[in-house]
Image (cartoon, rainbow, N blue to C red; front, side, top):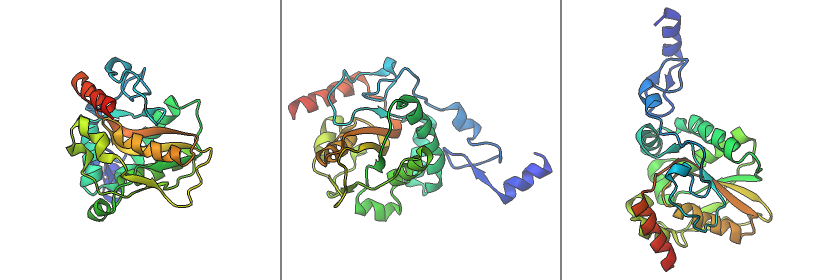
Length: 244
């Protein structure tokens, strides 16, 4: 490393946007993270967010119109989210949102949005973590898309964490867990709903339902990563949906 570069790194340290490790001043991601990017390749099924070659959703009816994400929840993308949520690295939001913004501009190129909002965390988890990771992503994504940001939902039930639930239990686990904030005027608004990760889509769907009940015109979603659903898990989720 040249002396000039070494001085820049020491004075203005830069961190990998995925793992948070120190990188050269002219790099965004370390070599390990660049090599392990689980990109969701086009063409994409906007109904479930998977590449069409991985799609198992069979067009199941949902309250949100579409969902997009730059990555699958595995390898370096999974490490990035774990660091972001549990490793006290809120600074990762800016570059994670940049990847989401590119995805939104690509796949929602014919749509426009009036507001960007997030799937909120509960008060208990907010106190424990110190920040709402989805709110950080939503604010930064709104800034990069030049769309107004507003908190439109609040969590009213401290339900069990979704990632600990079986696919068939996730919809029941979030039922009634969210409400719109008071005095939120959503009439005719096109909403972009943001979360960090999507698995079955139950949380996004419950939040979209509440926004539509408050007279929003439409809800589309954007997340940083999507868990690739296997055919077996897709069948379990379908059975659960049919039983409601």
